[in-house]
Image (cartoon, rainbow, N blue to C red; front, side):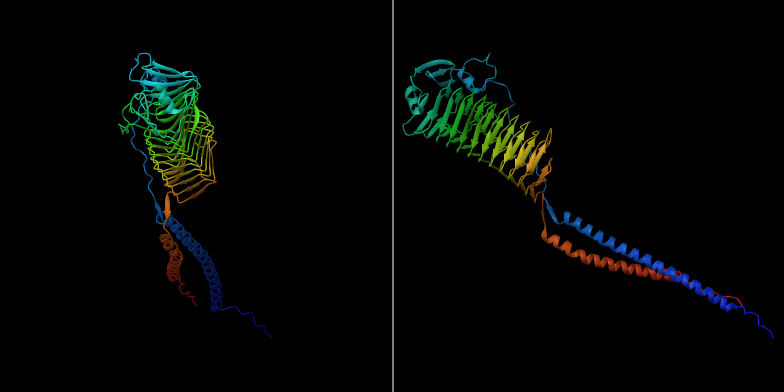
Length: 488
């Protein structure tokens, strides 16, 4: 019996096997491409979303906010150069003009006159020499008694109705105390060289009196070296105590002649008073334990409050300092261990409250600083100060720190910094409430920008899908396999 031999496959069967294997490979390749395409698609959509959100954020900052320009604070103000000199009280007692610099070569001027009140009595000085003496067994009590002792209206007038006129300097010396108060309510100081109210190692008190010069400021630009305007000054460890008074149009641009001054170890206070249109309302130089409280200090040529040059333990509390030609309150040149508390410094032509030139160890607490043309709170080369619980609004820069040592040892906490052209410069505002500085948001513009975000994302994703589908079809047509012909 014949056994059939094994049958070999035909050509068509071999070709069919090859075709089946190639199809499997193509299917696998298509699946791999589809997976890769899906992954790329998700990445593209994520990128579109992120770019849209970034664009919206950029538009919010650039278009959705209104930026205010930082204004310049440069403004010309004429001041005379500082020249060391004797204090004006010493010059007047020598018969010299208050602004005399060289006392060795200057000659006494008989037009310089002074009423000197001492423990032994009253002296009238003319050109530095005693013109008349009135010995007293007891201290002189007030202007009416002094006018009666002098008994010369060319020196001092009193009308018996509360009004007095002083034609010479009045100086309290040598541990003497003198008070200007009721029944006097008005005191006019003649506008002439050498007229002042002063204390030198004595105590001068002023209570409930309106004091002004006999003539308005003859030099509104403050350019003359001596505007012949009277002033009030305490020197040489004396005391000056002012309360419930109105002081107007006093002072000039000369050492310790600015308006109301405490110098050379003096102390005292000014409280519940108004000081306006002076050169500097209140000034200290190497003074200590001076209290400036509950006053209205306004429209002065330079500053409302100006503790200066090695003054210490100065208390500035609950004052309104406004519309002054420069700063509302400034400490300058090593003013230390002092307090600026619960004041309002507003609408001044430069800064609200300023620490300058190594004024350190001070506390600036609970003040309202608003609407000043310059900056709100300023530390200029003055580290180691505490600034807390202040409200600083509508200034050029809210808090400015500059100069040597920067913000070293500075405590800045619990302040509200709002609506300034710039929130701060030179210091971080962490720990403070900060809002609306430098810019204002445009809510309607922001609403439009962010309402368009989802629409934009959907449109871009749809557009991207359409492009990818078209590209996929084009690629598919370009890679379609050709027919395979297998020979017989």
